Image 1 (cartoon, each protein chain N blue to C red):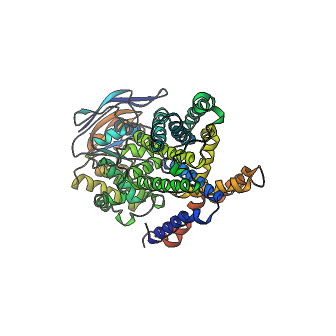
Image 2 (tube, one colour):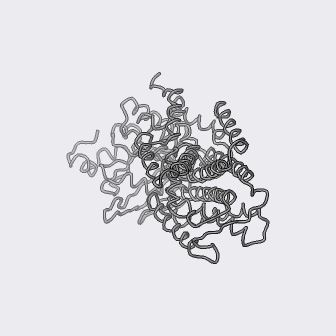
Image 3 (cartoon, rainbow over the protein chains, first blue to last red):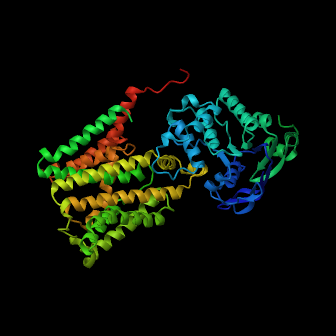
Length: 249
Length: 314
C-alpha cells in the first residue's frame, strides 16, 4: 500500500533521513523503531508532506505522493497523529474531531451554516469508538495527557483514513492508559481494517502488536522484517545493545 | 444562544435605537463613532483573535474603504449608494492583494511586511494631491440626502454595524470559522487534517478587509471627511489595543474596547493632552490582571460560576 524508496533529507548538512526504505502492505501493522534521533519522526513528516524530501520517492497505492502538501496527502486518506500533542487547545474535544470531519467533507469553505448542526453523528461515533464521548464538551486544555493523545488519534480518524500513521502513540501515558491505547490500536486494525504505521520506544508494545518492524539507525533503514527476523538481527543488536549477542526481548 | 443573551442583546439594541431621541447631537455622533470603530475592531479580531494572524496594519483597509467610497462620490457621477458597496469591495480586493504577498510569511514576519506595505499605501495617499487630496484629505463629501442628517447617519451606522456583526458572527460559527480557529490553535495540525491553511487564511483576510472597508464607508457618512491619518499605522495600533482591551477571544470584546478607547479619548482629552497616558496605565493594568481582556474576564467568571469543570472519575 505504501512504498518508500531511498528517501533522504538533509538539514544543514545533518542527514536526518538517509536512504530510508519501507514497505507497508494493506491491513498490516508496521512499527518503526530506532534509537532517539534516528529520524523516525522526520520520516513520518516526509511521508505526510510536512517536510519535502531531497530525494527518494513515496508511493501510496501506486500513486506518487512525494512532496505533496499535507492537506493533499490527507485527501489521499492518510492520517497521522503526532508525538508531541498537537490539538486545538482552545476548542472542545468535540470541536477538535468535528473540524477534522468537516474538513474531510470539504465543508470548511461554508461560511454561513452553523457548525454546531453539522457532522454531529459521525463525530460522536468517532469519540465513542475511542472512548472520549463522555468528555466531549471539555476544553482540550483541561484534558489529561493520556486523553489528549487519544484525541490525537480521534482527530486522525476524522479524516476517514485507510492508512494511519501514529507517532509514539503511548509516549508519556500511565500504564493503564497505555494498555487502553494498545487495545484501541488493535481494534482500529481489526474491526476497521486500517493499515497502521507507528513508531514506539516501548519494545513490549512493538513486539506485541506489530506484524512487521522496520529498524532505523542514523536516518537509514537497517532492516525491515518480521518480529523474529528483527529480534535476532546483529545490526539491530549493535544499535540497541552495543553489540552483545542477546536477542531483543 | 441562551435566553438571557437574547434578552440582553434585544435590550441593548432598543437602547441604541432610542439614543437619538433623548441624547444631544454630540453624543449621537460619539456613539456613531464608537459603533464604527467597534465594527473595525471586530473585523480585525476576525483574523487576529479567531484566525491568529498578526494583522498589524488593519487601518489600511479602513482607509481604503473610506477613500474608495469618497472618490466614488466625488469623482464619478455614478449612483451615490453604489459608493458604499464599492468602498468595501475595494478594501476586500486590497486585502486579497496584500494577503497574497504577506501570507507566505508567518506570525511576526507577516505583521512586519504588512506594516511596510501599508505604510507605502499611506505615503501614496499622503502625497497624491491631485487624486486623494494629499495631507489635507477630502472635506465636505457630498453624502446622499437621506443619510446627511446626524440622526439618519446614526441609524445608517447602527443598522450596517449590526448587520455586519451578525454576518461576522455567522462566519465565526460556520465550518469555515471552526477551521479558522483550528488554524489559529495549530496550523500544522490543521494541514494534516486536510485544511489548506493558506487559502483559508487568505479568505479570512479578504473578509476582514471587506468589513474594515464597511467601517471606513460609515466614517464617510458620519464625518463627511477623509484624511490620510485614517490609514496611518498608529490607528492600526489603536484598533489592536481595542481588541486586546475588550478581549480578543470574545466576539463583542473589540466593540467594548472601542467604546472604552473612544470615550477616553473624548472625555480625558478635554482635561489633558496626555490622554494616551491614562490609556497606557489602563492597558498595563489590563495586561497584568485581565490578560484575556475585560469581556474575556467577565466570560471566564460567568462560566466558572455556572459550570464547574467536572473532576475526573465523577
